[in-house]
Image (cartoon, rainbow, N blue to C red; front, side):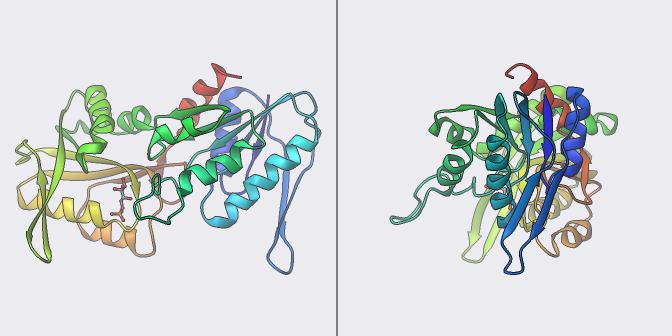
Amino acid sequence: MLVVPGPRSPLLAERLARELGCPTVPVEDKRFPDGEVYVRVSKPVKGEDVVVVQTTWPNDALITLLLLEDAVRRLGPRTVSVVVPYFAYARQDRVFHEGESVSAEAMLALLAARADRVVSVDMHRPATLKTVGVDTLNVSAVPAIAEHFRARQPHVVLAPDKNALDRAQLAANILGAEVDHLVKKRVAPDVVDIQPHELDVAHKRVLIIDDIISTGGTMVRATQELKRQGAKTVSAACTHGLFAPGALDKLHAAGLEQIVATDTIEGPASAVTVAAEVAKALKGRV
Ligand code: R5P
């Protein structure tokens, strides 16, 4: 097996190769003067099971991954597995308004066209993966995130909404904590109240788990309300830390004890790696 590290996921690719006990293949990546992407896989991969690792955010990273897949295919590997740690465009997973694209399915179809297998991590709606004809896998980052918080022993794990309860439930089971979800209620035309569905958080250490933090708005509002209700500490964790400009500052200012993301997007908050979970999933398939 060989790992091809995409330029947006170098750390995770190295960690994954270590977990799989296999080498990485050097990749040359540059831009033409007009901004077009150039990639070259600079070692032979003929007859090998090749794992290409690249998050598809921002947009150029998607083009880079498509070109890497094509480059690898042309070198005659046995199989190509594409690990897309953060699958961008996954949130538009249905037609919300007539005339829209289902971007999650459109992007997946592009990636699957040159792959034998597509692996992602905490895909926004895992059912999207069933829309292509190749082997697909959705890996959960929650066990790794929960382990990170084990020493802190949160009393309560909260999901930001009811739909995300499964993820919070899994973390709560691992941590032996209570679980609940937040409910958003519009109390005035311009005021949204956000609070736990059932649990009293007073004097408790609370961990909120989401799949994505983007602007940080959801976490900031939840943190402010939980603190108002007397929570002892509030920490925020997500799988994919997109952190739009200013988001981390806003989150720190809200008084969060910890802000933790994984290495599906490599950044300053990526304190948890998903390498072991992805390696485990691949070992059972390739
Ligand atoms: C929404 O569907 C996602 O699960 C996250 O809750 C959302 O992307 C968080 O966004 P923000 O950080 O901008 O509030």
